[in-house]
Image (cartoon, rainbow, N blue to C red):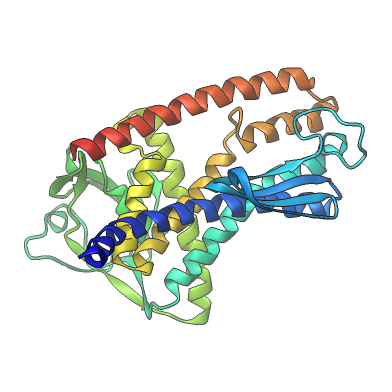
Length: 352
């Protein structure tokens, strides 16, 4: 009875432990990007920690103390002179602007590179890759009645370039009146199709165009496999940028956003299904983390890069006290926003 109860609890808990581990891995990869760049450029790293809180492991090697914290929700790379002045020649603050730029940007770069690796793993088992070229239609397909034809290669939807099948799927969400303008390649010519109509369906408050056609597959070769890795990764990036733009312009509301709680729930659900269900979400999150950190907002790496670029252009740094104040205000606003999203996620989980 006790074993059965334990197994029942464990079956519900382990997917969320996997989700937390995924978050930890992504953040550690980000911090390791800063760490390895700092080490290679001769900047002193005082401490590199996996996890926060009281340390359950601590070992000093050279100038750096390596730690494991008991709270597995992130990590950090603490460099000498990162947020304050220091007389140490190896301090971050005493490095040339280009060196500081490289160190700051490498966190996001490592997340993006990890995304490439995950996409490569996701695509490896596939023998065929879906294209964006129409192969056939469902019976009585609406889109066929509004101009779409077999062998049309869809290259643009409502003014947005289509990189990949994933890109095409995103372009079919929250479309007003179920009607889109398309550009297709037909018989070698670029053709515009106005007001192509699809039937719509709704799920979780978001409307979708019902895809009423099937696309051709392309047999995998070494060449198109490598090309597909970069193309799919570019498609993920495009979807992330477009989703941010759609949020800003009001196409999607705050209900469409998820914070750590919502994302953990999604990761946990995917982990219950299979590893191959988990990896695409993980790839999207790490690419999202890399791109989001490059946004020129205070408290993010992108905000720091903006100050460094200012210094590189005008040959004069912004006084440390002003930069620190800007980042402090940005951090407060960012944490407030995350609390709002987290509260929304918890409410959604409670209310179902």
